[in-house]
Length: 97
Image 1 (tube, helix red, strand yellow):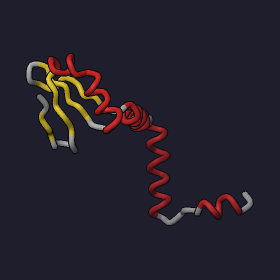
Image 2 (tube, helix red, strand yellow; image 1 turned 90 degrees about the horizontal axis):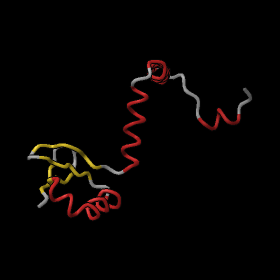
Image 3 (spheres, one colour; image 1 turned 90 degrees about the vertical axis):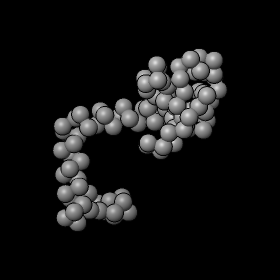
């Protein structure tokens, strides 16, 4: 019925024909146990079920990575950290600006 794949962490693989009859149970595993489920069709991976918050995080990451301005700001921030140009939160919130 299920096989376990360790390619990128632990995930289950389920053929689409089994998914049809066990959809509610599989969704509970994804939502409650935070499992990833690879759905196969004719023996090939066709889709992946992941918890909604992980999907949303992936979408947000893709959006950030595709925004040149945001990526430039992130890189500049990294360079500032490397140069030691940082301020603690306490200093930032207590010092007059």
